[in-house]
Amino acid sequence: MHRHICTLFVVLGVAGCATPVTLDAYQGEKQPDSALAVIRCFSNCMASIKDVDDASVSYDFRNVHADVVRLKPGTYEFQTWVAGVTPYAGYVSDTMILLAGHRYLVRGTKCDDGSRPVWYEDETAGEIVAGYKPRTLWVCDLFF
Image (cartoon, rainbow, N blue to C red; front, side):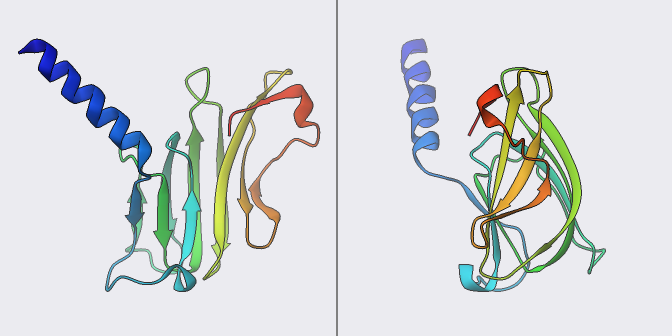
């Protein structure tokens, strides 16, 4: 019996890793990605997000596992932690304007000097929109 329970947890764990978990962090009817801002985080981010335009909208993802978060466009305050080799690779707190149809990627690294920078990349525009990306990633261990 015990062996079957362990096997079940292993199967569920592997199945959970295979399919990204998407969280629609907005109210109302389901919207297409072209109408939303999409943030990817590769399972090792924790974040607290507050909508600056609508104070009633606040999300705390520190205890929620989501690889992809879909939000309505607007201005948000973010506090993001990225897990790494040590308890956290780094932390970023910033205010960002998220645009409809844009895809954002949260990245983090640990550098030789001990710093643990975290940044948001707007994949659609090809630019860093929050946080700090080291210029010399060769002295850092890129986590993702």
